[in-house]
Amino acid sequence: MSRFIGTERFCLKIVLLRSMIYNQRSILVYAFSNQWGTNISHRTLLELQKILKNNISPFEFRLIYFDPKSFFQKYIARNQYDLIIGLGDMYTDFSKIRIETQAKNAYNNQPIYPFSPILLDLSLPNLDNFDSQFFVISSSMGTYNSNWMAYSIQLYINQKQPNTTQIFLHLPKKSNAAFIANQIKELLKINKII
Image (tube, rainbow, N blue to C red; front, side, top):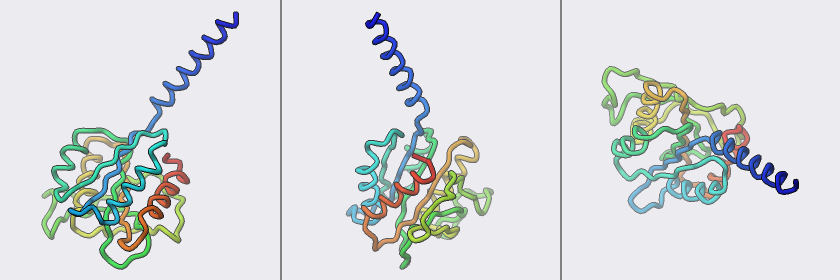
């Protein structure tokens, strides 16, 4: 009799474990890196890896060196994620983490994709709760690598993966990477993303 109860508990644990596995969100976190790996988005990605490694949701962490197009083809177009989080350096003197809401069809003053919309709203997950002491909402990404990646991802989401969401965060260059990583983790937790 007690042997049967132990087996029943074991089976229940397997069922619960399977439901946890199948309900997990697949999350890609990418960051742009300079050739020395010293920029704020690269350092923040490394800190996020440390603090999110024991999280239930499976995170994949990737760095982009130089060419966003080959990264897009290798990691975005060939995979499916529930959430894609991008980290980029903000090169102006800005002290807060910018939550970007729009990407522009422009890269170095040329269209990224001719005959595509000029602006695309990013398919953000619910981010109603954020600390305005550390975060600000923005709709001006610029026209370089960060914008290219966010626009390309959003166009791809709109065309092929409508259930995927993305967050792009521009990080202040003169901040502490561990502090920023903790603020990002809190943003994700408070909005029940992780």
